[in-house]
Length: 192
Image 1 (cartoon, one colour):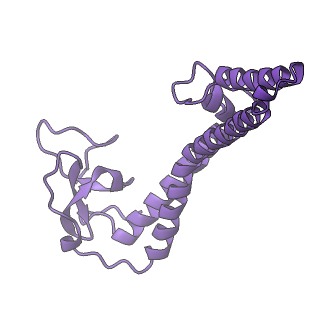
Image 2: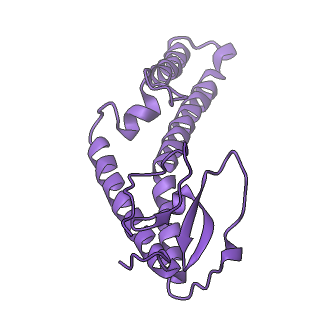
């Protein structure tokens, strides 16, 4: 790692960023795989259907109540041969269809929620790898923003002082601090 007063070259910083994101993604996927075994409190099944899950929109109790209602309608139709109740099997069929459709949609939505961040992160990693070799950034590529939404840090990159978002800081970056400023990460003073 080139640690000079000029800071990291952009290509090396992007390599470090790619490496750090890859490690974090691997750790995340391992913990997610461990959490999603069985019907534990962190599993996808729990999140999708358990009555204590704040993310569930269709609890298992509702599923059972609707299935029981459909069965009761079928039993009522079978118990009485009155032509006024000939529509009960159709109503029962639509209840079962609605339950199956809702269970599928809730399961699908929960799966999407669990897979969205890793999928988008893989896309970012692919882009970082693709652009890593041919990056020709200059100081003008870094925005001079004053936004409450993006926390910026004065950083040395490619021999220039640039205003870099905290999310793009990597190990080995040289940052310039002002008195009273929040520290963006674990830092140590640079020895001259």
